[in-house]
Image (tube, rainbow, N blue to C red; front, side, top):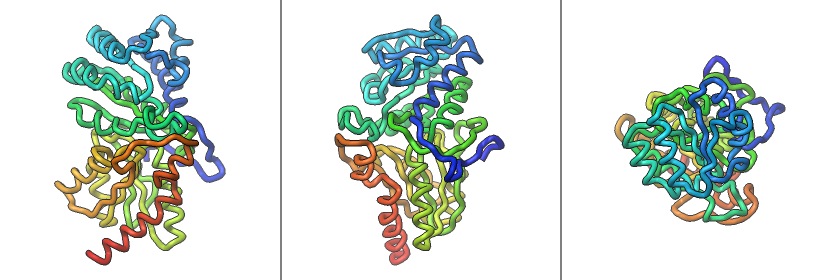
Amino acid sequence: MNDGMVLAAAQERSAEPIRAGFGRGLAKAGEQDSKVVALCADLTESTQMHLFRDRHPDRFIQVGVAEQNLVTVASGLAHAGYIPFTSSYAAFSPGRNWEQIKTTACLNDRPVKVVGSHAGLNVGPDGATHQMLEDIALMRSLPNMVVIAPADSAEAEAATLAIAKDPRPAYLRLARDATGTVFAHYGEFVIGRAVQLREGVDVGIIATGTMTREALDAAEILMARGVDAGVLHVPTIKPLDDEAIVELAKTTGLIVTIEEAQRIGGLGSAVTELLSEHRPTPVLRLGVDDRFGESGPPRAVLEAFGLTAPSLVDPIVQFIERTNRTG
């Protein structure tokens, strides 16, 4: 962990939407650099971009419900020397404007920052149409694109400041519902660096975004069942921290990936691609298994998809037992 990073102790844990950290980070980025501009597709308060708008109204553009224009205008601003952040629900950006992101931002290698809020299952009652589960796969396939999924609001704030200073296009994945804190304090966010949150020798759990808190809690339950699990938080899905992932595979011999997204093409796919080339290792990929989301209270939906800490434990134990029998 970096020098300013401190894990939240049990008594310090709270819950806050990850998007709130983005809002604070963007407002700070605007204070640090006058070239930072913000564009929104009629969801300013929902995406927390209003914090930037209220402080820097002369650098805020309300595009309206026009997500394709959102990123093409941003690409033009980037070409003119600005650092544009765009925000909408992930179901619409990148869900509706992926082709424009590809051709205007990535193909031209412009520093457009695409902020996809309300990603994953945690939008709850809004249901399958708004539960963006394919965005990691979509965005990590784009050349030049950085893909980041913060674990909590503190990390989202730090990540926002980091991508504002980075010259590449970037995708920042944010959740809607309040997420349990992972970090009590956060220093500098380093793009491409994973964070070892827990040491362990029996299995290595690699998690991203909202699933990192669940992974840490699952590791505590596993320990009570005699399984010593290491937890590696991977906020940057692209570029991956190859060294940290390979080292965890060497230490544990077994890897489990967890993400609030489609298993196909997401974090789990990225990890298995890496390990197949550098350190062949059995991998269990936990996430949404080739299906659409469902409507309901956010926690109930996560439970239904097996993505809460208690529901993660049995699949991990069974994976260890199965692999040990066949290995």
